Amino acid sequence: MLVGITHVVLHPNTWNTTECCYSEDLYVSDAVRGQGVGRALIEQVYEFANNKNCNRVYWTTQEGNATARNLYDVIATQTDMVQYRKDL
Image (cartoon, rainbow, N blue to C red; front, top):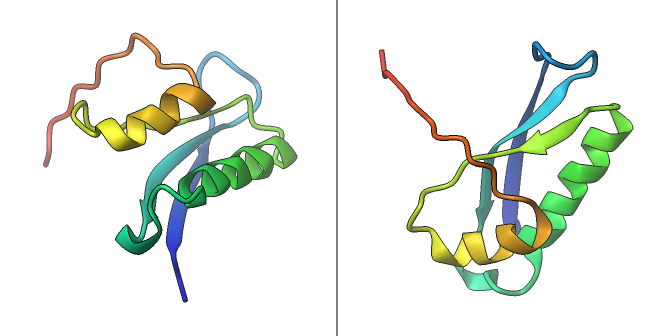
């Protein structure tokens, strides 16, 4: 049974000579939330990015996503960046 997925994109950036790892999507089934699946997936992303010699892993989430942010606050550092977007 599939309980979660994550999708990442490796890309160059202006300020480093190694790539960044953007965690574009993370989903955990409602049936297993709160059981460590999200943490395990993120830790696998960290391992993958480290093996690819990336300089960082980063992602965005909705401000009101309190459940996910409780986890993110433990396993990563919130930055002061604000995202702007224009959908085309």
